Image (tube, rainbow, N blue to C red):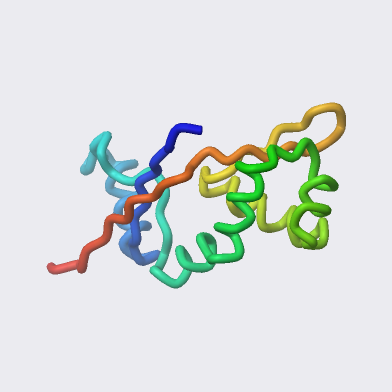
Length: 122
């Protein structure tokens, strides 16, 4: 699997709201190099990309499970816990969940991450 790098950004909720409004008003146009995924804080990013979730991603890459049931057996994690975690990872574009023959099949989309953040200096 070739590395797929996703650029993530850290921005407070207030800054993100202001940015979104400025985009909607046409006052700001995001560049193609800007992050597409935003976290509110380093802590929220750390929760999503926790060691436990990194292990989960590696298990998916190494074993290519064809269902959540198979992934449950590989990880020892309960299906509701896996489902919740995978949906969060999917929301951030890290994992893709496809329905195949009535089973959810997880695929890892991002294997590398670059983080961009700065202090708001007005």
